[in-house]
Each structure stands twice: as structure tokens, then as C-alpha cells.
Image (cartoon, rainbow, N blue to C red; front, side):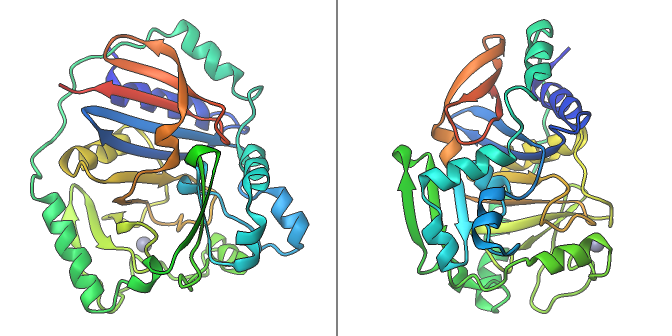
Length: 312
Ligand SMILES: [Zn+2]
């Protein structure tokens, strides 16, 4: 008994159990008949080289799933200038769990035989991409989606595209340090539970899909739990991510684990149409069979694991 969901779920459980690996970012994608998840374990949130250089808690990159996957997004010109390959590597290396901290996972994989099994996924939402597309386009039309966030983006690329840095000066909304502090104390009203003018909701699979008002991917959406429950991840939620990409294969779905800059008081994923640098990273297989493998990233700025399953 194993399969994709159980393998990923067990890995997640294992990482959540240790304080040096318990902050996690997950990205699920389905490309060329391969279902895959990128799993980034971390021990902290903010890179020290940025905060020390600028002496300002808001003048930094804030690594979320995109950053851990090699795409650094900044809204500040100075931060953009500072973000060269050396500084980005140092930042991502710092927040990632170290090789030493991840030894127990290698040990686990050495003795656990990872095997594929038949899994039934709910593929009964063939109209999902169409519904999301409608939601997205209507959001742009009525001004709820700030389309300018996706325009006039400057990009720098390093190491054959394994590190991309975006300057997104029109993306005016930035989650400041003080706002995160407020959120932590529950002083900020939940944006998902309060009505926002122009937002349209599409219910799907115990979740509600709506457009992200400040997008940084094409068709950037949020997938929010029906209930106001704290951000968490388990096998059931991994299955939800998988079923989303299987029904809407152009998309990738991301999960940002607490603590972070994300809205943590309300369980949600984000999704969008984009290909991230990590998808081109070299990997080394640690365990698995002909259909299902667990690998680790090689020579990438962050440490991470990749679980892949071939679907035929
Ligand atoms: Zn809420």
C-alpha cells in the first residue's frame, strides 16, 4: 500500500514533526502524464542577508512557494537590484532546511520501500478550466483583478534559468511586516470571509475558487476552504491539490505552510498557469519503482524533494 497521495502525505507528516523542517511549501503539477509534487522543507521564513543589508524588515524577498521554486518576485527596485544570483542563492540556502537537518528523511527513504498502487482520483470536473477562465476574465473586466500586476514586469535570469528574478513595480499591494504581525494576533479581518466588491466565487470540492485580486501568475486564483479553518496540510488536502491539476492540467497548485506571509487563519491554496524554474532542476532518485519515485533536488538553490507518478 503506497501510491502518490500516501507517499507525499507520509513525507509531509515526517517533515512537520521536526522543528528544523516543519515549514513547508508544496507545488503540485501535472505535466506530460507525470503527476508531480515539489516539496520544500524550511526552518525559517526570512533570509538574513536581505534584512542585514537593508536594515528594514520589509526590504527583503519573502520566500513562498514561487521563491523556493526559483522564481523571486519583488515589488521594490532596490531589492530587485540587490537580488543577483549570489544573494538569491544565499537567501534561499539560508531559509531551506540543511542537508544535515534532512538526514532523517534520507534514512526514512532508505528503509521505506516506496511503491506505486492504483489510485482513484475524482476526474468529474472537466469544465473546471472553463469555469476558472470565466471567473478570471470577469474579474479583469470588472476591475476586481488588478491586471496591471501582470504588466511591465522586468526579469533577470541566472544559472540557465534556474533562478529568475522579477521586478513587479505595479503590484502595489505588499504584505508588510506590521500587517503580518496583525494577522498573527488575529487583528486583521479575514479577507476570504468578508465580502469584497467584484469578487465572484465558484464552489468546488469543499472549496471555493475565486480570482486573486493581485495576481503574479496568469489565471492566478485562490482555492479557499468552505470553512474558516487554520492553514494545514494532510493526505486529504494533498488529494484536493492533485484532483485540481488532473481536472485542470495547465495549472499548478501551491500550498504555503505556516508560519508565513500568507493568510494563515483560513485554509487555502493558490493556483495559476505558470512553469517554475524548479521544473528544470536536476534530481536524484532516492526511492521508488518504475511508476512512482521520490527524488531530491540537485544543485538547486533550495533543498527539496520531488515525488513523481506516471499516469497512463
Ligand atoms: Zn475566513
